[in-house]
Length: 84
Image 1 (cartoon, helix red, strand yellow):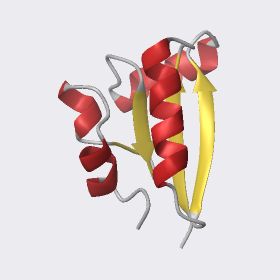
Image 2: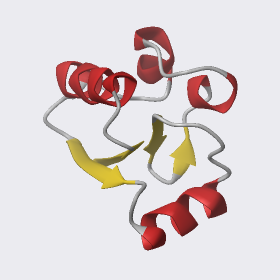
Image 3: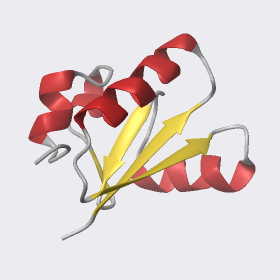
Image 4: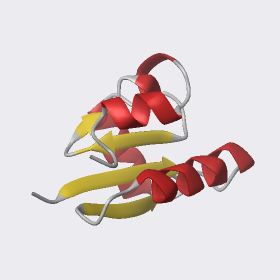
């Protein structure tokens, strides 16, 4: 089953680190999309998903738990299903 992974970012160093981490963890079944928060359509989608800070990672339409209160972590992204 393909896992749709969306990374909401604004090009900052923390965002770049998150993109690198997701790419490192991702398996062959992960479809990764990097989304630019400077695009108003992307920003609107982020609002719909409840994203209040970036970087943020969404897996199959659900904001990863680690992105709801803190920033993305290796453990949190694995728990969200990235890399499995």
